[in-house]
Length: 87
Image (tube, rainbow, N blue to C red; front, side, top):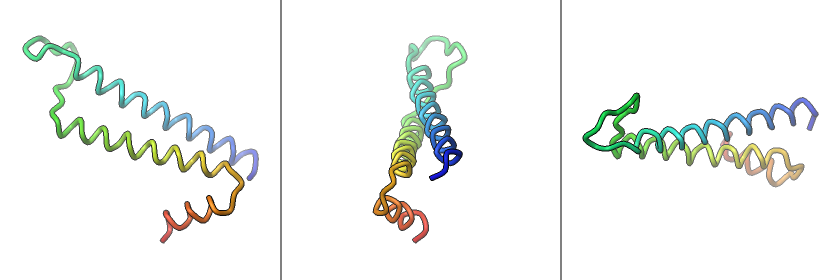
């Protein structure tokens, strides 16, 4: 693995972890209001919206895990990722 590729993977991991954190904060921010009060720039989220965001967070966690696996120099890990993505 080249140094540039390792740096690119690290940058991607950092980006997706930050995105996951922002999604969690979005849920907390938009679900913490009085039901009858003013929204103060918040969005009313129903159960379907929250479920969709939680699914996205779950997909991000799996993707981050696979990015971290790529950094390990093991052939079995490479075969696992290759078979999952391309077959």
